[in-house]
Length: 282
Image (cartoon, rainbow, N blue to C red):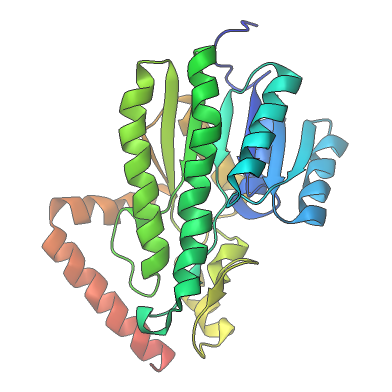
């Protein structure tokens, strides 16, 4: 295998933030199955170590790093330790994220700050830590997890959508800059995936007196995809160097509609917003 080129995926080295659960854990497992060495980075100490151990039990190569993506020094240390140990970094999956659901009128300033610290600054920290090293080695692929909420309006998830729009914007601009240095950049925009973030995740929350069973019933109608299936589909598109990766694919309909007619897209979202409030008794 060539030492000075991106490996796809056998023999590659990948760091996945948010690797202890949900999408991150599924991506790590699928990367390892395809022959990559994976570093799972997550704030959840026991969970990330267990996830890495499960990959090793199946014959994969995996290590765990306890990292808070809101702490740049911790992210930088994980990247530098990985490169020092392996001599390369093929992939960085900036995947860690939290959700805060509810109306903006009920937000606290702490809610905004938590969303920006993890979903926005966490991605910036990953890019800042890894991009320069990838430029120096002449290859690499940064894959940022945004959301369909980063492509369309998302009332009830306004702060979350704000951070994901930022991730999409960062990814698209950096992709153009990075190409001249041999570095690839993609942004993943999931639809609804069956992960803990559907009710905020361990470090997120749903604001207000909304019964969790009602929230989950609404998500179920949107046919959440199994994270392992999601990971396989995403990595197939990462291998093709797609700029924007939307999985499940049928969610592209909403993106296309909003791009074609923003006014129509807004009206449809407004109707959905009113229907949701009525269903939740708000």
